[in-house]
Image 1: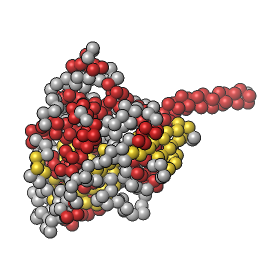
Image 2: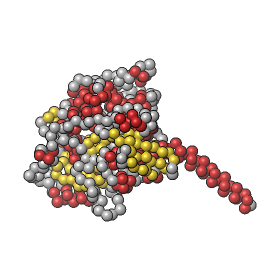
Image 3: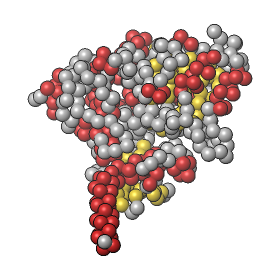
Image 4: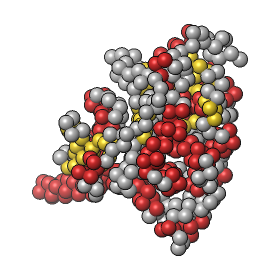
Length: 454
């Protein structure tokens, strides 16, 4: 009987090891790529300490299993899990961090881009284009209560992370009326915006529409789709995340999204290879693939790669004071519109302010008011949840915004980054963080609104 039990136990252990290996092995390169990429961008672009990156951006399971090594001289990061699934990421000036996959590392290192000079210093220019704040704040706001709300939104120094907020900012009536940061960070710190990059891409698409270089109603013209049903997909279908492509968006397992982001040199080509699953425009499916398709179409519309890489800065960021924001590219030079931007809390507040004022920033019509209306109009197939790279409702039930005005719309990032715009309250609220598990965005907004004049 003892021998039988021993054999059963051994068989069980062997089966357990086989199952664990079968499950974990294909996921290891995704985990290690995620860690190496996040660490490399955060250290060399955002200038955060490795300890803080590990404790914040990379603190969740199974990402937390990976170990990493940083080479400061060559600006690279290598990550493994139990010595397996090794992935290396290198940093390129002006283009950000990129995973070493098929393109030789030497060629990746040779890539770089000189981000255009904005032509001004924010130190001497009034808010919102600059950082010189007005001598007085809007009347009628309960500033003591507001400052207390912002202070409580951020974990106090020395305590165990709970609310996991990195920075918050509030604009009321075009004025920055409050901001607060986790200890060690400030208004210049760049945080990972994740999917809020999609909304930036929506703005860039609008700029091209204004210039007559992009037709939202036209088919994409993607050559690989010419011979099948995908030829009917329009730019607008992609903009509304209603392309109908077969796509699974899940960051916690092997999915189309993680394969594209962590295992593809050419993300545009990766998405083009997806088959059709639904009639274009008939089915809404949140898709980082659609976002990167849009980035590729923007690239094609601009034509020249230097102009494409500078477009976000010269056409958008620099015109609205977003001087602490960088968008990264893949190995093929595509702006990773789905996920890879780093920007300061103040910069995201300025971005929200642009939309609060219908595309006009300090008298400069950066985006047409008609485009702003288009971007916040519900996508036909989304059942009122999603618009044009903006959200209209929180995607998770537990984050439902039940005590907030109906005219709210917002940009949403993977781990709890938000830019909320509420025109009826003349309000923009930014929250940068790395989890929403213990943070109620509904209560946060409700409490802020309660401090404003009625």
